[in-house]
Length: 426
Image 1 (cartoon, rainbow, N blue to C red):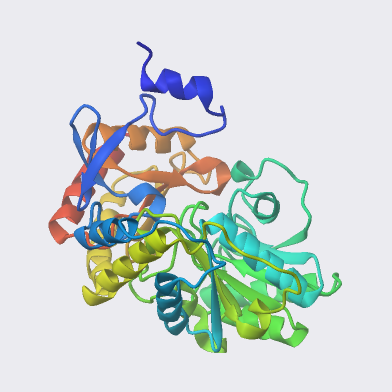
Image 2: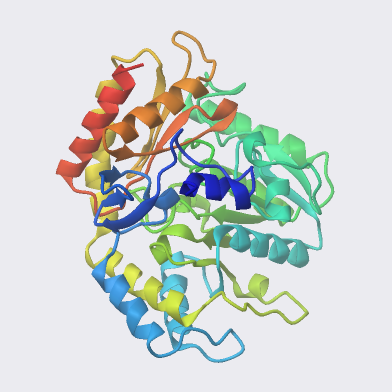
């Protein structure tokens, strides 16, 4: 009989990426651990791409899903939906956006797609500002604004996109500047760019770039951008698909590190809120959310089952202060990894905050990316019982570490020890 990998290759697209030379079939999980089809256990430091936010098989979420599925699974947004209204109320209150409205989708891609529709309609402009090295999804519009060549297979787009400096602190023409000078230079670049354009609809930016390798600017950059954008009437969309829900530890939303000029006009979310269930969405000021002059619904966005999961998951997150846990355990983990990296020539930088940590690898003594080294560390970590991710611009040479937010100190140390072994094997 053919292996599952052979069957996968026979019926699924060639461009559907799989990790590892011998791809892994995950059959079940519990807490921060998962098991493969051979019964081997792994400590999960990637959480299905930052999606299993609280824990695998969290009883509170499992029960909420089962209870709701036993009543009704689907009705669509054409009918009143109590779980959807209740989750929207909680998210609107947590968002920091005044007079907030919430629209649910099934993914972060669709959430960003919706935000772009709202921004371009509200502003009557098809011009979008995005950050270099950014990633916003795999739909036609979001691929068109993505600033990372590894994830942008076509240059065709319904939008005109202009790319701004600032999302990557440690590379590019401003890398050697102090934080203050870096922000000033990026703001000057934005001002210059706007001098060459017609009316722009919005700037969309990840507070910490996810697929881009967990890079981020100095705190306050987007606040400085916001002051410029406000003078031109340009909207600010914070892509919180990966940074939301307390993962950074210091803040509930990534934008709050840049909140000196107020909240964004819109924020998009997905991934962690569903703990594996398909939830995405947009929060926007009412005047922006309500600007569409045609009918719109969502067949699967706001499903009673996914909304029940989101309510249970968000409740667990807040009641157990998982943001505080991400700050405490993540702080210990990043310092442990920095100590390890000090003795590994291939590590260019350990960066991030909370439980969102990136390790950038380069050819020793240079700034040249080392994608082969990143792949080797991924394989070595897996062999020793740890799952991590990878990403980054410059040929995907950053390791991505993003465990469930309930990670314990002992588990952080276990994962760090495996990573140390994998990095030293380079």
